[in-house]
Image (tube, rainbow, N blue to C red; front, side, top):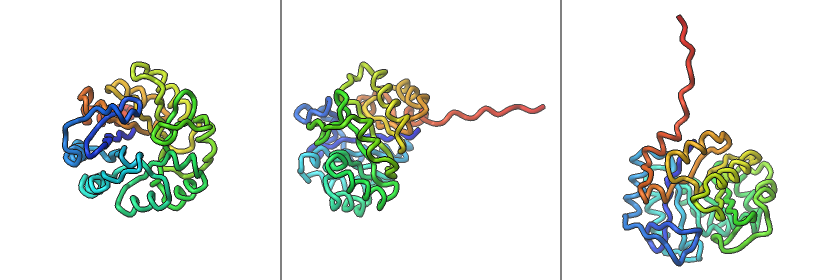
Length: 247
C-alpha cells in the first residue's frame, strides 16, 4: 500500500483544517520546501500537495508549489483549484506527477474523462463525501450525486487513482470511515486512496488488510507527530510471503 505524505498550503504556510474550514486553520511553523524534502529523505515514493489558496481562485502559492515540484525529488500529486483543461495541463507541463480533480469532474465529466485518456496515470478523481452526497468547491457545495453513482458514472475512465474522503465522520469514528471507503473501493475500477483516516500505525494496518485500498494520504498525524513517516512506510509494506521449508 502506498503512503502519500500530505502537505496542505494556505498563504504560503503548512496548515491542517478541521473539516475543510478555511477560517480556522491549524498553522504549522515549518518551511514547506524543507518539509517536502524531509518526506523524500524518509523514503516516500510520492507526496500529496493541496493548495487551499488555489481553491479560492488565488494564485499566491504558485511559485511555492512550483519550487516544491522542482526540488522535492519525488513525484507530487497536486490538488486545489483545478477548474479547467488549461489549468490541469499547465501543471502537468510544470512537472506535477498527478493532478487531482473534484469540482471539475462534477461540472464537466466528459472533459475529465478526456483528460484521463490523454494523460494516462496522471489524473486522480477526488470524491469528498458529506452525509451521503459528493461535495464540490472545496467542500463548500453539495452536489446531486451519491459517491457510488459519481464513481460509477466514470465507468472505465483510466484514472491514476480515486481519493475518497469521508468529511462527515469524526476522526474518533475511524471504523465508519473505513467502512465507507472500503465499500466504495470494492466497486471502483481505479485504485482507491483513503484520505482523512490515518492517526496511527494501527489505522494503516486496518487499511492495508481491508484488501481493496491501494494507498492513504497521511498529513495531520505527521505534523502532530502521532506517527512518523518512517513508521507509516514500514507498516504499509507488504508482508513477506511465507516460504515452505524443504528438508
